[in-house]
Structures are given as C-alpha cells and as structure tokens.
Length: 142
Image (cartoon, rainbow, N blue to C red; front, top):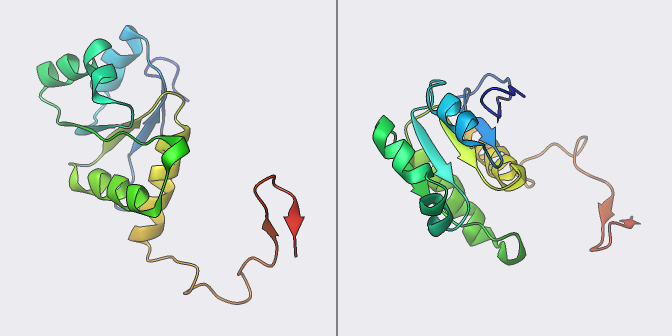
C-alpha cells in the first residue's frame, strides 16, 4: 500500500490493470490519490457520505467522473454484484474503487477480473474445481 495516497494497486496483466483500491482516506491521501493517475472513481458507500466527506466536490474539481453505487454487505445479491461490476467497467480506466475498508472494493475488482477473463464455476476445469465447501459458519463440508 502506498501510504501517501492510501491506495493499494494490485499488479496483474489485464484491461483493469491500474485499478486501485481504497478504504477511508484522509484529506491529504484523497488529494494524493486524485493526482495519482486515476481517470475515474467508483464509491461503494451511500452517495450522501461522498458528499459529506468532500469526495464528490474534490473529484468534480479534478474533472474525474464519480459513480456512487452503494453495496451493502448485508444485502449483497448476485444482481447487486453484477451491477457493481457493470458500474466499474463503464468508467474510464484506471479507476479507484473505494469503500470504508477496501473489502467490498476488492470484491468488486475480483468479480470484474473474473468476468474479464471469462471465468465461472461451470467453465472451470474439474482438476481445479473446488472439492470442499464451507457452510455459513465457515465449517468445512465435503
């Protein structure tokens, strides 16, 4: 993680290369992140938080498009996941994906990468398909 910008930039060879993940940013980190080469911003918290924190006005001043798409971890559905990935891929790249801790941001990036590489469970090789699963309490089931 770059402590100046507060951004984590995963390294991979993909059309989404350069996407950065962010959790809560200080005003100084936000200013540094805005000038780090991002071309857009996907904010996964309620839009009112983007306005209250000054994020929307800072991005508007820098000429960066910002999409606010609330992803509630307690109400995550496949439809929300698909829409979040669509919101990311519709933005100019590289983008910054931000939520409170970068956890949901990371999940959206992983889903977008899987989609861009055309990965899905049905298409995975039987030799690499998971043979173990976990229940809601993370107990391993065969």
